[in-house]
Length: 244
Image 1 (cartoon, helix red, strand yellow):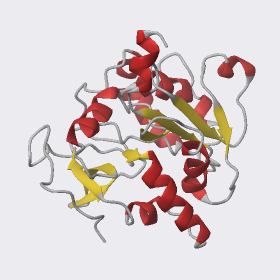
Image 2 (cartoon, rainbow, N blue to C red; image 1 turned 120 degrees about the vertical axis):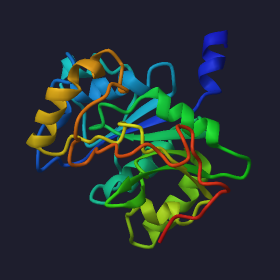
Image 3 (cartoon, rainbow, N blue to C red; image 1 turned 180 degrees about the vertical axis):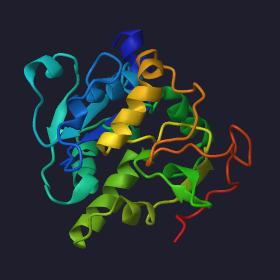
Image 4 (tube, rainbow, N blue to C red; image 1 turned 180 degrees about the horizontal axis):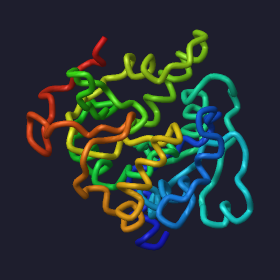
């Protein structure tokens, strides 16, 4: 194995979730995001140089596929939400740790992934970011770092119980919670209004790979909020269980 391949093999992998129905904004993953389709923007932001798999309901058009030089896995458990796609996808991956990210999050970037990796400690099975919403710290399980084996074990148990919640999986894991209010990475494009706001404020920085530019206000699902109480690298102390 050449040095570059060995380096990639030792890094966290990336699982991009692209199997949602997108009923509020059909075809959103193909919308322009800084000169390329949204799903391609997400891949280029976080997946390049890492083992990456896209979980999807089916393939994309040939011209979009050509911009995504990574495997795509079709969810074997349709109708079970993101968890079904994650269990299928992580079962195909080799990396021990995997960063999970939504395919409609064009501002998710390597800085967040690196912060989660830096916060990881022995014994952790997940590192899940928190951000303040409605005055409360809320976890972001679909922009988090997971021990692949632990997630598969817990995720399979949750699916067998008839549930399909990623939150239910994290409740079974030894999860470290990291306060990252200052990151815009959690911006999702779910509605036409979200996309219009993204185009107006972030499309150009996203095309440059710069998700740190200042802005006024925020998207309905992506308000970055105040600076974190613990500073730019703030962590909530010792490993904590998922807040109930």
